[in-house]
Length: 351
Image (cartoon, rainbow, N blue to C red; front, side):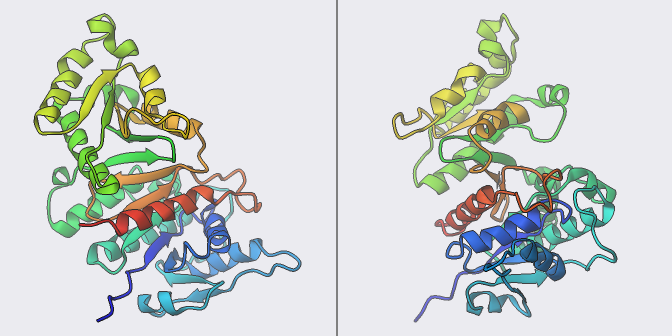
């Protein structure tokens, strides 16, 4: 008996005023084998416009095929872009490079549709093109970004409270992985929110996700919060009172966690190159920018954002909507292509 074909992967449109539609069209053009079995959860006419943007003499735009059912994804001919109409079409043209509630509505509705499809099991993963948080808010979506929207959808689907759906953000490229204890909040609030329980929860989520990805227990490096990881309490006591107790508790559970290490060196120690394998498979960072700066410094074109802790697979490129170059044809699809590659890996891993 033949195995059923794998469920397709949805790529959400992102903010249509940004580079999302363009990098999606370029990804289908530049990596057709990888994107076989993928489709766009978006708006047909917006994707068609993005495809036309890429046309040039001797290189016509790729046709856009509107899907009647998800079963059609695997049977479509090559060199076309499959689109599921996941949102109500815009009532007027979207102004490229400008924040608008209409663009935010389209972006948010596409993510909601894809999240619900993933939770039903209709798709194997979703890859989210970048949205604009201000536009999302203007459209009435009360979420700071993708992560919180997907967390809420997952909690509703499983009929549990949002506190029962802890999630973490992982940023990864081919040299470094970081997981964040806190995501979208002010630095002051992130420091105040740091507790031993929250860090232990992060270590558990990181351990489970990386063990599934790597096929073995990961070696986790933990960054300190303060300069020099507190220098024995001279520069702050969070390491002594919060971080060390959480690491000790994690180690008692069999989690291979180490630290806390000085934040200005731990990422270099974890960085893996052909000449020098990293000491750690992943670094747990205490707040948003502490973990994102080193990954992005190594190059956003290869960075992938992965949401850990959800009952679905979600990846995303490691950049924003880039309103300043939207509509110019200059956007680089490399990070989106890497996000699709990561989604394939995660969605085919053993349960």
